[in-house]
Image (cartoon, rainbow, N blue to C red; front, side):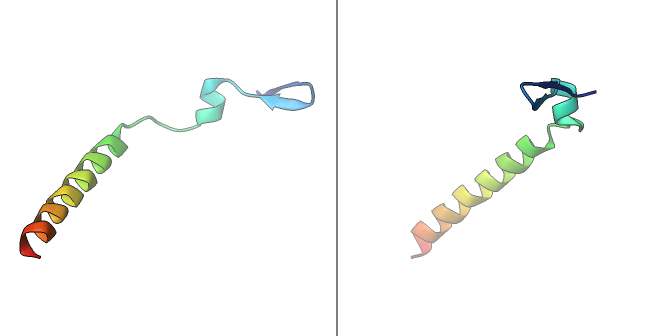
Length: 47
C-alpha cells in the first residue's frame, strides 16, 4: 500500500511499476533501428 510523506504518495518500486518486465522493447528498438539504417543506406545509393 502506498504511504504518504509530506502529503505526497511514496510508492515502492513494485507498486510504481505495476507490470511485467518482458524485455520485448529492446527487440523492437533493435529491429526498428536496423530497418531505419537499411532504409537510409538504400535511399543514399538509389538517390
